[in-house]
Length: 161
Image (tube, rainbow, N blue to C red; front, side, top):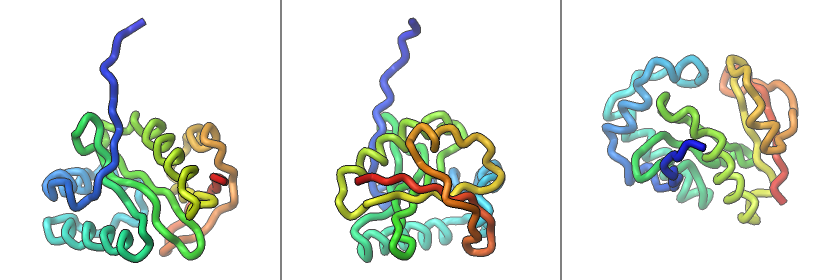
């Protein structure tokens, strides 16, 4: 058996992360492949607006997107966003952290199951994503194909209560 170092996944506020880290992450052209809504050019001003919008969700809804850290280092962002009456979960990782997705999603779903405000979680998956096994392993069920802000997505739901 290979001994690998422990990967401590923690969640923090995006406002606690270096804007340069977020800018580097969101400027990576590989992200646009699976993010049809990512259309703006990222610069420091865009990062400031992005973080402010995510903080506003925390103030408005009491929950929002986190900065995701692995062993204290920024690896991406994600979390829960209120969409009408539903809580949608999104996850945007740095390309070198893609393999952490299942562990991060599992930790986030444990959070959701412990929060009475979240009876279910939805996932909007772009049509470009072909591997949906992680959603199946979480127990998410296919809802259908929807359009959101002009882009097509596959929608899944996971009951958490």
